[in-house]
Length: 408
Ligand code: SR1
Ligand code: MG
Image (cartoon, rainbow, N blue to C red; front, side, top):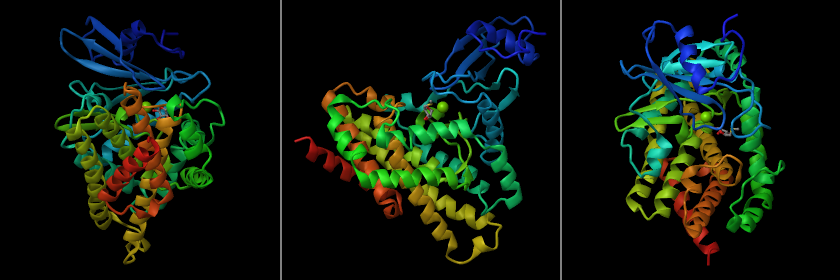
């Protein structure tokens, strides 16, 4: 039995030997390989293996049996199989937008892929208030191509059902059902993290608001039962690598067939977290770029969705005049509603975002969180009122005013 023929959680110094054994030929046999753990997520271990002499490198991502964020949150190690297969499917629908997969190892639950050297995690770049002029165009293309093309509007229905079966992802979906679609509204597992100056505010506006709790309950069961499209499932700015002229999406381990607005809504909410940070530090130009990008992402998504629908719809009922717009209205309602749940869960739930938690001025952070809570409520309670990008931006501006009123 070889060292890597039985599963164990690798340490940094195990990984060079692993790639030399499993991917022989990628590096020279006698190459001196360095290895660094570069994972920033809550779940897996991510290593960059590099041969300094040739400059060649690759990424190894291994699943542990426990998530990194908490020993209580277990997730099947099969998630990395799902991730590597999804990346290959996404590569087919949206070439150039995801890293190339070299292979997946079913024993070590490790996936090897192209090293996106020269790219940076979008969340960190946004926290330095860097702007990305291509982002709205790129992410809207990625979402329309990977989402609409995997719906029953386009895909052969039996083929789609096979994929639904293959990508059933109960453990990772359960994490979302708990962390995103339950705990922000009742803290039933007592693991929410509420910023102390907002304690009473959160009690009143979330846990104590029957209307928002009912609406969130409906969104939980919509998420669990609307097997519409093959989602990325965790499309936040920590799942996106950027360069000025290019965008790469990775980390789709939460992928499954769900409501496509879940992905679009996650992008909207995470741009609002960037906006929060810009406002907190008085960088008005950056904050307006973030809101312009919310607007453009939604508007480009709508424009490309319509074009892609007209070009690719195969089902005869999908072509009934007027149905495309009915369908799109549902997608936009889901987008608003799930942008709302993402705004809430990153503000009060256990997995928060550095864009907001890094705001050092207490009043500015309190304000940012209140904007998120009010904006999220507006998105959820009026989900059918968001027909274009500007509608999404106007809700942020309304939330700004509402938050100021609570702050005296
Ligand atoms: C236990 S995982 C916590 C969060 O990190 C992931 O990126 C997902 O967003 C998940 O909800
Ligand atoms: Mg992740």
